[in-house]
Image 1 (cartoon, rainbow, N blue to C red):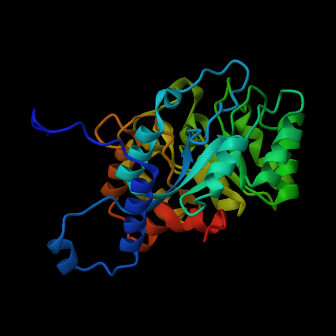
Image 2 (spheres, rainbow, N blue to C red):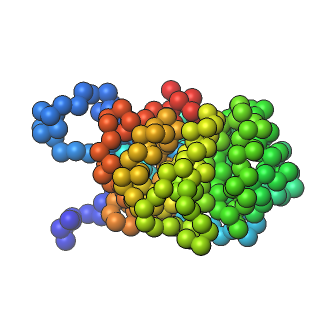
Image 3 (cartoon, rainbow, N blue to C red):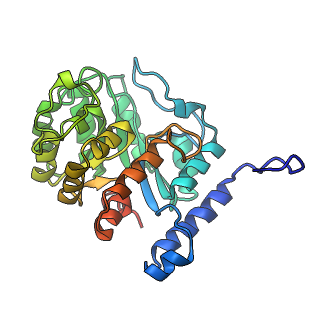
Length: 320
């Protein structure tokens, strides 16, 4: 706590963030031992965050018709850098990027990479996405549009992902965005070379074989293995999972015994993501901090834990 005589704390700069995350990355290479653990307090584990919204390069995030701007749009860049520093993010995927964001990220591609998106049901969307891919975006998404997941507009976006050999992240929320999740496996089958990343309420609710829409978007209670998402992650080599947002947290926390088995079962498919609008990266209201705590509670083998926190994303996104 600052004393009354102290000066106002200096805002976190981009250089501060880079320095801190570089140290965190270096720490990952150090051997873990009981002596090391006892010698220094534990800090945030270095991770790759595949799901954050913040146009640090300027401009507006593309918003699908009918969608509202998220709380992250009220977060200034210093807040954003601080959030990522505090959760231990050494590389962050900026979603919904535009030209200015992509050019900004290129200056420090070790710490920032971009996915691009345009609302697929708006005229010219696919042309604009292709231009952004040519400009340096490494994926499409998050695709959060008021269309069916197998609609012609969405299929056109998937075809673009195929052409440029980039992953596509999809927000599944039946009744609102990418409706018709029960049919999505047909899209995955039709495009076996496209890397799909699933995310959001309907995707995570369907880890449970007994799930019904009556249970709502954030179902509680024990989970029966064998839900659509559980089966499809095992069946399709090109389907991956983004553990971001409250929906990912819910899947981790509602039935810890199931969650641990699920994570171990799909250890090569799961990736850490935040999708958190808070300004600090700490505390009980931070989606990211809650997720990290939930992962730690699973007491995973270090190899599995590292895959989820960073190596799966590094491999899928072809990061150095």
